[in-house]
Image 1: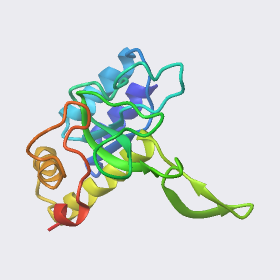
Image 2: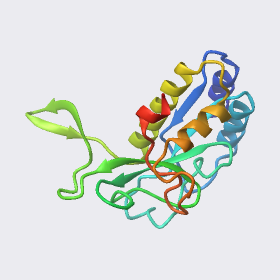
Image 3: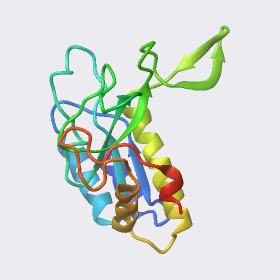
Length: 181
């Protein structure tokens, strides 16, 4: 089933970016095949590096984010330096990070929505992945003739750790304003 959807996205010329917030500690052949298919058709594929409970947080970057055909993203805590959010994964396959957890309170980044008079909080590598895909879409919309490699290069060059890629946090946080200049 997954492969069929990736084939559909891969064949759709209006789709340039795929954001995946799913993962597993083991690879799944049909998903691998589908990711490769979409990648070979020029799609820029962002994947969550992993947000887990104690059961799986011993694993580094999870599948399919560990694939060479994807761009792995994770969440970090705000503040100085790079520290992964409480349940986020890190590792050598991570390319980018997004602040997803407040240092003082431990809360994840707030969004502008409320339920029963309480602020909703979202966070982790899934939300970081969607955020990064959104920044990539802004870059690509400003430069519609670019290919995925050019967009990815611009994202890297606009990141806080460029040109000294971290072994755990990749190129770090993307400066969206700089990326769309």
